[in-house]
Every structure is written in structure tokens, then in C-alpha cells.
Amino acid sequence: MLQILHAGCGSRLVKVLVLIVALGLPMLASASWWNWWDDEEEAGGSTAQGARDVIFVGNNWEGMIDVIDMASHERLGRINGIPDKQKRVTQIYLNPVTLLFYEAIKVFIGEGHHQYVDDMYSSNDGRLLIVSRPSFADVVAIDIASGDIAWRFAVEGYRSDHMAISPDGSQVAVSASTGKVVHILDVQTGTEVGQFPSGNSPHENVYSEDGERIYHASIGHVFLPLDRDPIKLKGERVFQVVDAASLDILKKIDMKVKLEEAGLADLSPAVRPMAHTPDERFFYFQLSFLHGFIEYDMQEDRITRLAELPNLVPDMPIEKYVNDSAHHGIAMNDAGDTLCVAGTMSDYVALVDRDTFEYQVHTGVGEKPYWVTTSQDGEHCYISWSGTDQMSVFNYASGQEVARVDVGDHPQRIREGSVPEAWVEDQGSLFLP
Image 1: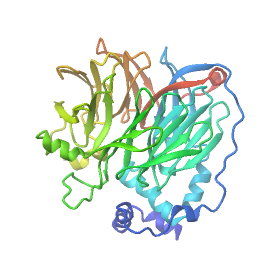
Image 2 (image 1 turned 90 degrees about the vertical axis):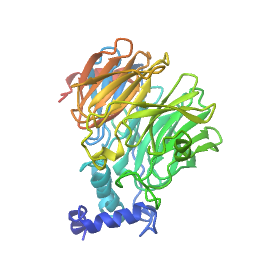
Image 3 (image 1 turned 90 degrees about the horizontal axis):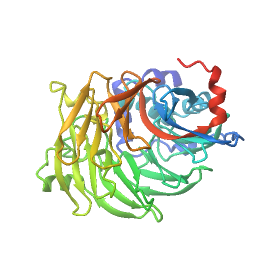
């Protein structure tokens, strides 16, 4: 039976079943009913003795995390984000419901690939690497020195997604895509300290600089075509401001209404990656299908400007955009005057002047950029090229690429953090493909 289920997951019948379940109709069974054995993992026992500042690049399809020196941009080593793969896959295959979602993620979201590493952050001491793993619907803490799993948390529903770490490094917020909630976890123990509700497909999370608020967006069912949604098939898509202490929803913005008020009703209301000015007054939201971004004034509570960037694939039907992402990745320098934007479907990175929205477009660097992060010094932006398996470093001031690093299969999220110096020394004999 399991072989039949697995072989048929690409069939039209199975796709229909997946859509029925994903759209929130009655479940065949709860995933927790099938949790037949203890998920506790043996915790690694190492303690970091000194730490090295690094850049983590998560390779979603491969399940590996590349570790790059922050100063030299030399690749130092790799961390296995799925050391328990055999156990997890075995457990999935014993549960028809989780097996259905495991294959559905591959068919509908992963472009024919399982998604093993979406996001990651290190603990302040560099001992643990916290990793969200969509296809395994969980978050794990990997003891960097030993490679063992220190703790594991299974999210509600069947897929984990973007994370954010609190400014003090004590908690991580992780989106549960089909669970319609965001979990807040203790970094050291993996204990859930709270959660807050979201719309359909919770996605991006960003903590305020003071740690008092969480900015969160849900993007709806991106695996469904188009964006015209007369019967609400895309689901609820909202932007929320959340009190990080109480987890109360302080503000809930229906971007569809705000777009209509701004005369931009033709744009999708699904907020994707976001960036903001240092004072957190102006936010810059990427939207599904949009080649560009909008500017939102939090003080006046309205959309103030639209930045339109080049569409270099005008003949491509939007149904072929990967998960509705014309652009997916935006960041701002510390000075608050320049934005770095991933032109995902057009294969470019753009540096955009915040005041004028004038831009420099860089093509021919790589394919399908899928994330952008600003460096710790505030002067560089990191771009993952998911189609050509590299990471670039661009200087905001010069507008030029200053480094490029080969990484693993389908890099997406890029985060800065630290690892134990002893771990770096142990990588001396490691073969880096």
C-alpha cells in the first residue's frame, strides 16, 4: 500500500486530495495520532570554547548548511541539517497522512524536491544551530561541535517555514505553514513558550530592533495558480504586528484594502519578504507576482509609494513563477538609504536608492536569487543564487559584487551567527565539494 501511495503522489487524484486537505477541509487524521515512538533525540554535550563569526547558507534541497567566514568569505565547513533523515523518513512512511504532505511539499512547493533546510540561526554562544525543516514539519537544534540533535520541536500541521530570532537570542519564532500559527520557542531547550494565530500559510517573521514586536505576514496558498480570488481559494493573507511578550495581535492589516485605497487594487495582497528603515517607520514589502515592492508608512498606516523594477521575463506566464515569487528577497543597509533586492524570476540583483527609487540592476551573476540579508557591518548584502548554487556579496556603497562563494544544492536563507572555534579547527581535513 505504501508503495502505491508513494508512486501515485504525482497523479491528478492525489493532487486533488492534497488540495482538499491543504484548504482546511476535515482531516483524515491528526498527525499526532501517528507519533508512535518517542521523538526525543540524544542531546550533544559540547560547550563552545570561543566562537567564530560566520555566515550560514541553508541549502534547502540538499539538507546541508554551508559555513562561511564573515571576514574572508572562505568556506570553513558544512553542517548536516538532517542527521536524523533515515528516522524521520521511516516515521513519515508509516503515516499515510504525513506521507501525503511529504510528497505534496515536493510536488507543489519544492519544484520536485523535498525541502530539508529552510531557515537557521545560531545561539549566542555558537553552540547550537536552530534549523527549520519544512518537509519534516519541525525545528531542531543541532549541537555544532558534535553534529547531534540537541532538541526537536514538531510544529502544528505538516510544514515549517521562515524563522526569526529575538534580538537577545533567547527565542525563535517559526511559522507553521499548514498549522496557521507561529510558534515561539526557547533557543536552548526547544520548549514552546507561546504561539500566536496567523492567516493561511504563515511566512515571514521579523523582530523589532528592541525585541518588543514581531512583524509577521501570511501569504496564502501559493501553490494555487493566479491571484484573482473571488471564492477565497488563496486563503487569508494578512500582515500583523504582534506584541513579543504577550503575543497579542497589536495590529492586523488587510493589505487588499490598503492597496485599493492607494489605487493599486491590481496588485496581490500577499506580503512576502520585507525590510524597514532603522526607525521602523517605513516598511518595504515585496508582494506576490510584483516585480518591485511597495513602501508602507506605519505611522500613517498607508501605502505611500510603489517601486517598479524591471521585468526581464515579460513573456513568462505568472503561473510559472516559483511559489508566486516574482521577487523574493529584500534588505536595507544600516544607513537606511539603499535597498538590495532579489529579482528572482528575472535573475538579477538590484540596488535601489530609497529616496528616489532609482536602481542599478546586475544581471549575469547567477540564476534565481532567493534571499537577501544585510551584513553585520551594514555595508554589504548577501544574495543566494538558488539556481546556480552560489552566494554573492555586494557592497552597498560601490554597488559592486566583492565576493562569490560556491555552496550546496538550492541555497535559500542566509543568516549570520557564530560557531565554536574548535569546530573550525576540526574542519581542516574536511572535503568540501
